[in-house]
Length: 423
Image (tube, rainbow, N blue to C red; front, side, top):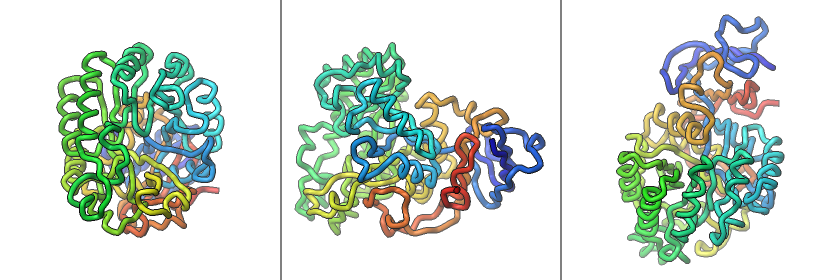
C-alpha cells in the first residue's frame, strides 16, 4: 500500500491538538521516522489534519433510485466532503429489511470511494406494520435500524422493537415526527407559514414524539438515537434525558444549523426539507446545543433528487437536500468551534456506529488511516453543477462557504488530492 507524509498541519483528534507531521503506511498511522524514503508528501501548511468524518444519515439512492444517486457518485461526494464512512439509510428499493438486501447493498458499496455501512429497517418495507427480522439483521452485521422518514408511529410496535433490539446490540434511530400533526404540511408552522400561505407543521409534532420515545426508552432500556432534531424544545428534552443516564443520543443537520423558515420567503423548493426549517430561535438553539455538547452528531441527511422532483409548486415538490459535499463547510461557518465540529462529525458518530472509541481512532501509531486534511480558510461558492453528487437539490446553492477539504485518505489510500478526486 502507499505511504504518505502529511507535513506542516495542525493535527486535531479526540486526544489533543498539536502541530506536527503525520505518517501513513500499510493502511495505518505510523511514526514519521518509520516511513519509507519514497513516501508521498502532502503539504498541509495552514490546514487541519483530523480523523475522517463519519455521517450517520445519508440516503444514497442505489438500489432503486440510480437517477438521483449511485454508490459511485455518492462515494465521490462523500470523500470530497471529508467523509470516510457513511451510513446508508434503508429506504431503498428493495428496502433493507433482510440480510440478503444488506449483503446486496454492501456489494454495491464496494464501488464507492468511502466506506459504506448499512442501516436496516425496523419494520418490513419501512411500512410501520410488522417488525423486520431484527436478529437476522444483527447477525448480518447491522448496527443501526431505522424506519427513516416518519419513524415508527405505533408506540406498542416501537416498544417491542426496543425490547428485541436491546439484547441484539442494535440501536434504533428514530425520526421524531407525529404524523397525525404533520400530515399534508410543507414547512414549519409559524409567522412565515402564515405569510406564505403554506400549511405548517408545529414544533409540537416533533416534541410530542420525542417525549413519547424517551418514555419508551425508560420503560425498555433499549438504545435509541434521535435523528434530525430541529426544535429548541427537542434539544432541551433530549439533553435532560441524556443527562439522567438514559441510553439515548441525537443528531442535527447542517442546514438546520444555518437556515430557518424565513429563508423560504422565495419559495425555493431546495429548502423544502424534513423536518422543516424551523424558526430562527430554533436554529440558534441548535447551534447552542451543538456547541455545548448536548447534541452528539452533525449529519448531512443527504437526500438527492432529480431536477423534475424539485421544479414544481412548493406544495408538490419533494423534500430533502444534498449535503455530503457542503456539510463540513456549512458547520464550520455556523459559529460552532472547529473542535466541536470535528467531534460531532468524526469521532463521536464513529463511536456510536461501533467503529471504535475516540481514543482508538485518534491519529496515533497503529490507528486506521482514515484521515482528512481541511483548509479552514478557503472560500468557495456552492454550485450544484460542480458537485459530484447526481442530486441537483442543494439548500446551499449560491451560498458562499469558508472551509474546504484538501485531501481525504480512506484506509491508507489517497482518494482526494488538492480538492479533487484522485486518479
